[in-house]
Structure formats: structure tokens, C-alpha cells
Image (cartoon, rainbow, N blue to C red):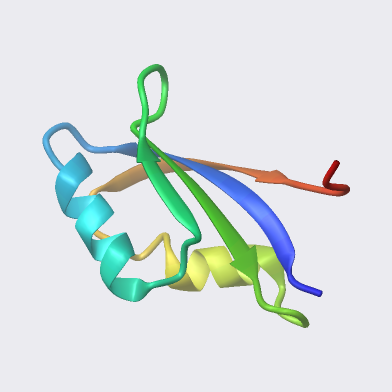
Length: 79
């Protein structure tokens, strides 16, 4: 069973749409939203079974140019 995580992403000023487009091209997310507040994007993704969550995010998401910071929230049980 895959692991569902939510990742909040802070982008460098003026790069939010570019970052969102790059994420969309990688097709790693389930949902991606622009948001207000301390972060610019909120992404829901499912980490494939057997993959290390931190390594997956570091390799698939964080190399995208324009990402300044991220905050990952792990999920446990869906109701």
C-alpha cells in the first residue's frame, strides 16, 4: 500500500507557476493547489510502496529550480 503525504512548498518570489508546471510534468502528484500563507503550493502525493519517503521527495521534488523550502506531513489513517 502506498503512503499518502502532503507537501507544502515555498517558492522563490515569482517562480510559483514555473514550479507548479515542473511538478505537473513529472506526474508525481495526486493533487496540487496554490495556497495563501507561509507556503505557495500544497501537493498531495502517494509514495510508491517500498520507497523511502524522504529519499523519494529529495530525488523527485527538491531538485526543481525555484523551490525554497518544503514541509512534509505524513498521514496515517483515512476516515
